[in-house]
Amino acid sequence: VEAREGYATRRPASAARHAQAAEVMPGGNTRSVLYHGPFPFTAEGGEGCRLRDLDGHSYVSMIGEYTAGLFGHSHPAIRAAVLRALDTGVNLTAHNPFEARFARMVRDRFPALQQLRFTNSGTEANLLALGCATIATRRRTILGFQGGYHGGLMTFGLGGPGANPLNVPHPVLLAPYNDLAAAQALARAHAGDLAAIILEPMLGSGGCIPAGQGFLEGLRALAEETGAILIFDEVMTSRLAPGGLQEATGVMPDLTTLGKYVGGGMSFGAFGGRADLMAMFDPGRPDAVAHAGTFNNNTLTMSAGLAALGEIYTPAVAHAHNARGEALRAALQAAAGDLPICVTGRGSMMAFHFMAQAPRDAAEAAAGNQALKELLFLDLLDRGYYIARRGMVALSLMVGEAECTGFVEAFADFCEIRGALV
Ligand code: PLP
Image (cartoon, rainbow, N blue to C red; front, side, top):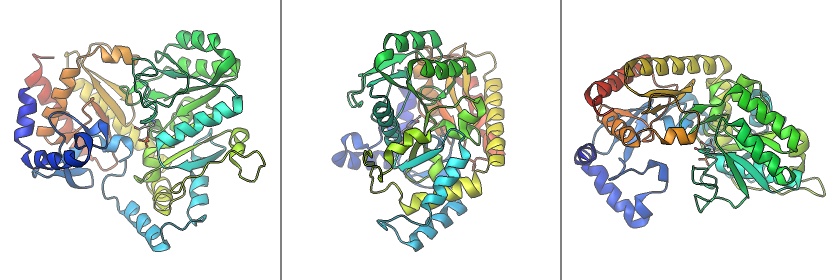
């Protein structure tokens, strides 16, 4: 309570802006993930890895727009690409010079993609991949995993598939993450109607919990056995290796969904995979499945994406960046000393858990102390570091060694001052 009050007292301009926003948006909010009590700060602007709020505080963004902000707030190559698109003309209502080049670049990068189509968000990409799977298999049921986040219309918490009343009403079975036997039992019991198995190859929002190799390989085999389509939601994890976790683990899904940084920080999503499945979207076919979307090939995203993958996040940069993330995670874990805190994750994505043993699934993660996560979030804000309130960090390319060192020091301070609570 004291930390919340201190936070609010130091941010009166954000409080006033929040009150104005609440007159036109419920809770002053259009992204639930940003909300926290008593109100979130309003960013006035950002540059590189830094954000400024309305009350004159400066923060290093260690959340990097939940992985989409890999290039920071003002990368010159992204800026130039967006300007090229503006000069070409927006809203062309036709195929454009950037689109097929970008599609080829994405296809060549991720090994399980033979063909793909663009969308405007990761949410849409997942809905379309699931639609593709249900049409191809003529089945309805989906197997997902607790704690999986597949977008605003498919949020798989612990409370069952209908826990979020907005969820698209597929019949959904949920197994604990990393529990192959549970997934096998559910899939086999529903094999006659199982259309798809969908998962993030590392739980992202659910706590940066890596999948065991045997779990992924077992799900690949389970999809073969039951005739279901295996979908990897790599909206977040695609940044963890040049070709995503499918490349890093060698486990190939039938369909892959992408989003976030791949579009250079613009609105972006894509889904794709086996050419025989994607063929249903060929509008030249008499039985084609229609997939339209006004902004699917918008020039701003297509051009920014070409710069993102082609000029900035090259395979060598991806390797180096994830190695930096591993080093940061190790330094944070070391700073925690003997306290019961685990920093889980892989490469440039990580999360704090207030517990002695690293969680293997969402239920174990939920058993950690959530109030301490909020305290860490608020304390770090006052030290000038912005992480997700749920304890997640996504390293951007703009965060340098000095910022990483400062972040580890700020976390070490937290451990020292708040250690008795932990
Ligand atoms: N899938 C995963 C794994 C995500 O983390 C997200 C967003 O956080 C999405 C899908 C949804 O993407 P978008 O917010 O672009 O709709």
